[in-house]
Amino acid sequence: MRDGHRANALLVELLLVILFFMLGSTTLVEIFADAKHKSLQARAMNAAVMEAENISDDLYGADDPEKVLADLGFTKENDSWILTEKEYTLTVTQKDEETENGVLRIFTIDGRGDGKDLFSLPSTRYIPKEVSP
Amino acid sequence: MNKRKVALGPGAASLILIVVVLSMCMLAMLAQVGVRSDYSLSSRSTEMITKVYELHDKSERRMAELDAIVVRCAKEQTDRQAFLDLVKKNLPEDMSLEGDIVSWTEPLDNRTMNCEVQILDPAETPRTKWVNYRLKVDEPEEDWEW
Image (cartoon, rainbow over all chains, first blue to last red; front, side, top):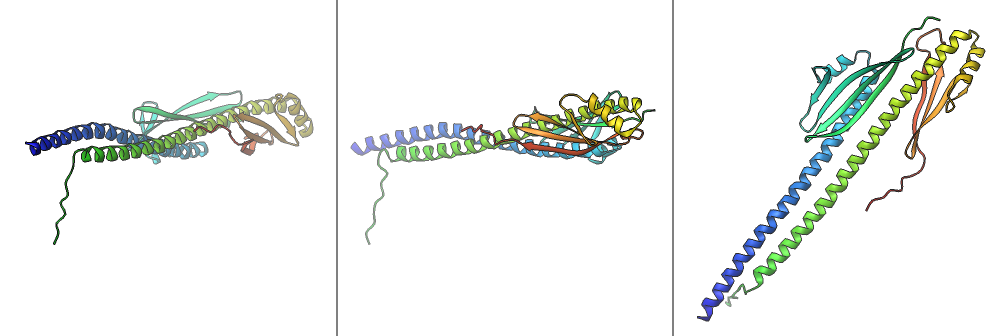
């Protein structure tokens, strides 16, 4: 009779332990998954910004920026150039601003990853025009 | 040979559960702290890079402004020295001219970008040329976040 009571108590305890373990592990798995997700986001941001810096420098020195973008793997969609990588997407748009004696060639490189905007880098170069004295 | 009987008494499973869950909580906490600091570092680095590129944008606009001054002065003076004197007179307050080098600084938080541009022959294109384009850190940042 006493042994039966003891076995029942042990069984109930084990059931409770399993229940609490499952509840606890559900929460912990969520925390680990969130950490992994954040780590991937940080990695994507670093990779995207590094790539954007390289592209910005390439565009600054380029005489034919469209060729440079095409060589880098960008595809033209409407007025912008898009590069889609596994972790991020880069979009380059060009806007020229006329100044008194030249043109400001402005490229904006927008980085997007995991459904949100990561950064927006401007790459500007002043190109002077010939002026008659 | 003696056989030792291993019995799992009441409460042992609960104790094991507490130890396991506490260890996993610690690991999860450490993982979160590490990842959050990595993410915050990446965000700050991206923010700073963006600011530096905005500064480049600003300095190119100043270059355009300077070029306009050079062209205007070149129309009025043909003699090189008289032309440079006129450029000096027409420069904005934050720009200075020494010889044929125009210099100014662009501030950014605790950093400054030193810009130096050489004035070339105004009859030819380009009329100006970048000589120095350097970002300098004035003092270390004191915004530690724990």
